[in-house]
Length: 285
Image 1 (spheres, helix red, strand yellow):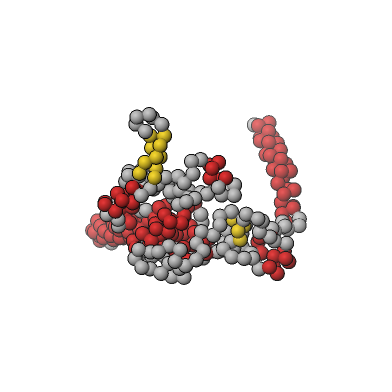
Image 2: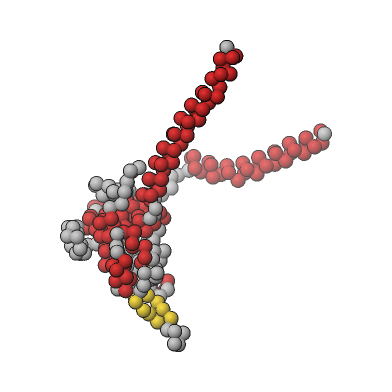
């Protein structure tokens, strides 16, 4: 028994020595070492915020603004689709935005998608159909990088879920382009390399994507809404929120139903408890 206990104690002692030997240098440097040198870009980065009036789907009672979603789709189609794909969204899904079947047929047909020639078996192109997914703008990653300063444009289907506070991130990124303060840049030794663009809401503030929304009325909205840069940014951010979470509003509505049911079940259980145990308590008394 004593031998076994001694072995356990020895094993624990060895483990503690190994752990201490591994962690002590790092802990000492963290506590007493020089602070990590911050990159010059830290002087410019600002955490992005959403539009002044927020989004219609914000909050527990949020809902989709379908006119806004259609405007956002128009911005994606006319501005973003040249570089960014929506590979997880099919044309038929546009029905959820309020488009009719005929409108979806016409919209799908306006896109060119990859196909197979039934006579030769060779790859070709054809007009899209409602069952097709949005096509990729480039044939492969190499072509995408070659056309975009060696940066591959990400797919936007799930972008607002892939980024923290995604809807506001997209909005702030689109409205965050500009020029760095020259005095501050000279002070901290910051510069934007050739081929990159300054964006105060991008993590390292230098981004390979050129400003996609540069002037008001870059898109002419079918419903007559004034297409300012903030408005277009808000609309496309809302649309990309829908592509990433089409069941967002339904999930919120279901949540309230579940909460109501649980409250009802709790009250019912309490009343049942009172009814079942009332007689036994009287007898005991």
